[in-house]
Length: 280
Image (spheres, rainbow, N blue to C red):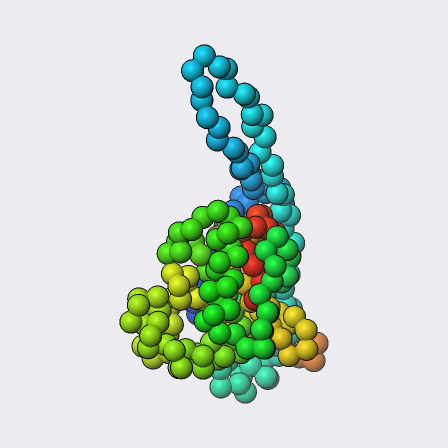
């Protein structure tokens, strides 16, 4: 991602850069979808080509093959700026055990999490495959969601590295509880991997990702999803970018006015490549 750090002498640039890099490393959902970067002078919109599904027919000697018009579609995604502006007075930052760098790191983390939240907000848009619902998330529901995605795409490769199941932390807790009952059997079959220390890496060949950025899907329920990488797309003009300016009167005294923004856009690309998981 394109990141730009602007700072005054009051903010140690190396610490702010470190906070940005750490925040990007902690993105959970963004790395699991397709993404394009818009460069300088390339506008604010990027296009994703969507390849058509074609039919293969028999070839008969002496008979001309019928012609199929090849026409691919496109999904255009436009970026939008989102961010947080804060005013940190010197008297407050000097009193804080974390200092201005700690304050900035907290803001940077929350703006970065917003990038994941914009993606999870798209989960409810998967409509080709009927949503999978339940009181609590179980391994059986994950398997049911996997079956719907595989049948929807016609791809039966269960171990595809491009498959991801993103769930909320509360759904994760329910899944671990379910696996406590039948996890040993799944582990013996190799279907469940990486269970040590509660770090369940995959289930049924699907990579698992846990985040608190999954949205609500009703009273007490959360919206997770199981999808192929090509189901969703992102466009990035710049990633998380903090800009700070020292001011002699930042509204009550000397301090620093800071903004942390990202300029990104998100969209569903192929509806059949994902299914929503709704549970408590």
